[in-house]
Length: 280
Ligand code: C2E
Ligand code: MG
Ligand code: MG
Ligand code: MG
Image (cartoon, rainbow, N blue to C red; front, side):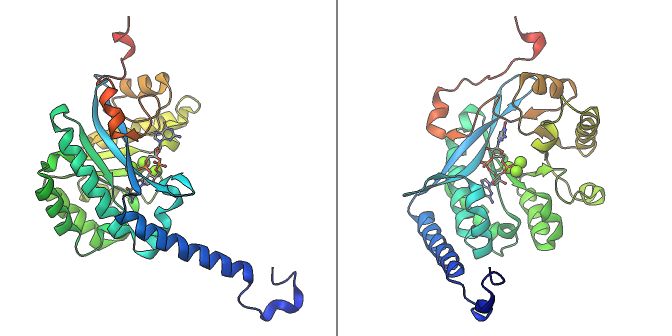
């Protein structure tokens, strides 16, 4: 822009840029207010046991019901939340809401899974907050799984906190496995309960023999590490069947259910899929 306008190069603060800065400031103020005013809503997506077709878990995925903007997905505001530090109050809100829901689902044996960003995990108060949430909701630690991405390896404090989380009995999952910094030595050194195979792999299952081989290896590696595998982004019965035969324990994707409000779960069946040999 500065080049095109030639002589205007000295104008450091372009009006368009000013608008951007203002819009960002407005987003930040609105997001801050949204956290306390109930505009953040959680949708839950089923996690399915491939051996039985039974729903055994639910991943909480945050949305922002923003007045005048509709329902925004996390990709539209989690980045801002991380940059501004709002991820901490936002994440705490999500954790509390998800644990309250998990208590309601305890009798249906549905555990809840919550995404936690590395930045949130590296905050000094995280363990205390978690402890407080479990105490006030009365949720058994086993009913909660915390999902982190491989970026956690790069943050020593976050990694240490994660292992302390695991010591409390809360399960930990490695999300989007294979898309970030995967280090076999870290994987071997730090125990995870769950490895989530990213949808970029499962999407190519039918198309590439090479990808199928890689997914098979991830499933085997997961087993060797003593964790269970969850395949993400499953959209077709063929993908689900392939994964079941390959020994993948759990799966998640539009085939079984899209993320939806907890209220709509009351009318969902508890078994959402049948293996090929069980079909008649
Ligand atoms: P994720 O944790 O890997 O979640 C899976 C994403 O894939 C979700 O997108 C989900 O709606 C989508 N998905 C599920 N099944 C399918 C499928 O069959 N096909 C396709 N194409 N997509 C599928 P969503 O809800 O937009 O969330 C995006 C990301 O935002 C999440 O990825 C997670 O990293 C982050 N996120 C969501 N909620 C939170 C939160 O409360 N805190 C933090 N820190 N991050 C969150
Ligand atoms: Mg996740
Ligand atoms: Mg994922
Ligand atoms: Mg993802």
